[in-house]
Image 1 (cartoon, helix red, strand yellow):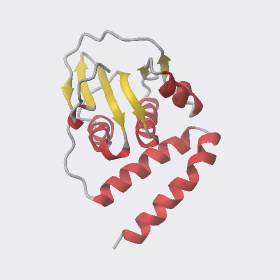
Image 2: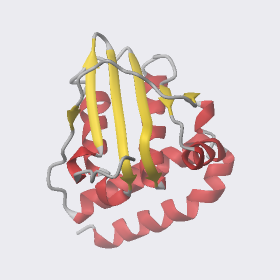
Image 3: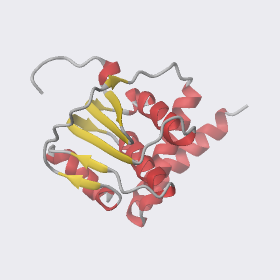
Image 4: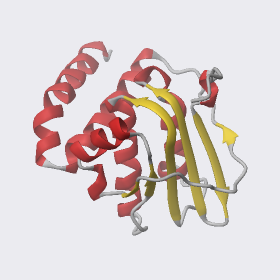
Length: 174
């Protein structure tokens, strides 16, 4: 990073060019700022508002990524597979993030490219709407469920988190 501060709403950038959907994730990507990404995934894949024949994700400006954001990436890969799209392309030059992605085996569901990208598209900041605590908890649960579904190692690592989140949500549901 070049020392400039990044506004929270600029953590997630998006562009669509032809039939390719481009994501640019920047800065510290934590569950506390994941709602914009979840909203975008919802619009793209669950509601089908945009058509993506290919997905490209640029993590070159990301400095940290927690399991919620990694789970959101896993859900993108899952949606692409369900829609018979090619595996999403993920650009990342950050060694620690790459190690994290490989250890959680996202390299098996993404085409991981460990070099910079020079995407010539005009990105727009993605902002999130207000979310209740319940909706945020459900988003975190969905992200971790996507990680659990990737493979047995992730199931072992994240199933206790998923079970705890489910129990907490069950206790808060009227």
